Length: 278
Image (cartoon, rainbow, N blue to C red):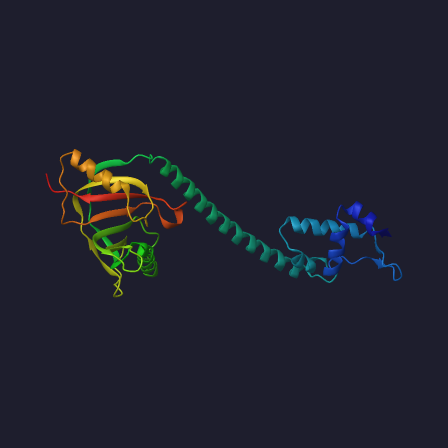
């Protein structure tokens, strides 16, 4: 018989772990001295330790290992346990692969974001019409996030997959709120959709008109800030080119960074100011 210390050395399992195995009924000492309380193990029990270690390496928990060590364990029960463990591990592998794909997607997105310089990028482009689900309301600018969430949830509940760029249409400014002195804006939030789900009262579904000619500025911004330097920069760029703003048409902003891809409080956005025809 081997005292627990010697058995620990031979089995390469700590005394603390052996005592824990005893508590779980996984590996009982072959003998316990009634007077001293010393635990003794038989050399044959080293094989049990090896079996436990092998099953742990295969991903089994101690609770799952216990049935394998029973003397009356039937082959069919062991096979059923192995099949269940295989199915569990296959699910874990699929989940890990899904998570890995998500991480790879984030890395690719960050690589693309690195291509956007810190400087403003100006150009003139056509904006095509697009089918959208949208919500329009007059709210303090800080409540823009609630409108974004409302229309996103509607799109998802209608079976739409991950949406493209969020579209912000800035119709007008209606002064400031009385309590906080915060800018009050007439604003519309839209999400591109593939299908044509019915609206729900607040959310409207329809075609967002295109813009034949729009001055564009891609930049990094805080979407909830009360002002954005990109707006004044783009207006100056338009004036320098001798272009004229279509004053009756609202300014738009496209949030090119999805919510889940945001890091910090800034996202890549495209500011669009409609221009008059040449």
